[in-house]
Image (cartoon, rainbow, N blue to C red; front, side, top):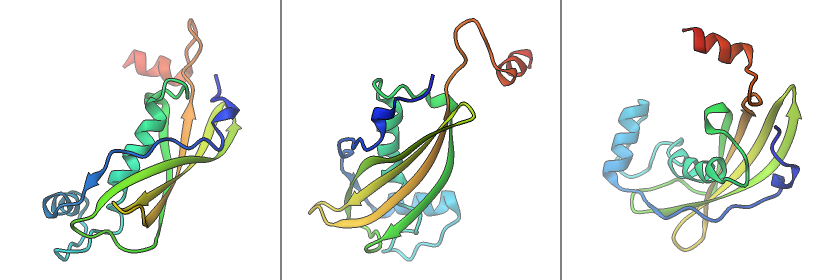
Amino acid sequence: MPVEESLLGRTFPPTEAYDVSDERVREFAAATGSQYDGRTAPATFPIVVAFRAMTGLMTDPEVGISLHHVVHGEQRFTYTRPVVVGDRLTATLTVDSLRHIGGADIIGTRSEVADADGRPVCTAYATLVHRAPASEGTETAEEAADADR
């Protein structure tokens, strides 16, 4: 069943504040193989906060997304300023686009990442591809293959 058209344009509440610490940035840099100068976070670090906003979308029971049927199709960032140690960040997600193609929902999101004073830091854009689970009593060829493994 496709995601409801009413999702288009919906803005979700801001995430809980995320404190950017030296330890968290070092862990992220080590996990991603990114460079870290001891002050400015790697360019992709805001995904930590933006993913929290995406999780809010995907776990909202009114939305009807099955998390196990989502593929992250695209991610990009535009910056107002770099993320630095000491920032306290939140992300507010808006669904900017919604298309239904070949049985899949293509959901375009925009997460505005802001500091503790509400000033913009960056915007994270993502495309999520959601394929609803097969109706009860039926299964897709992929689900049948998984069951045989």
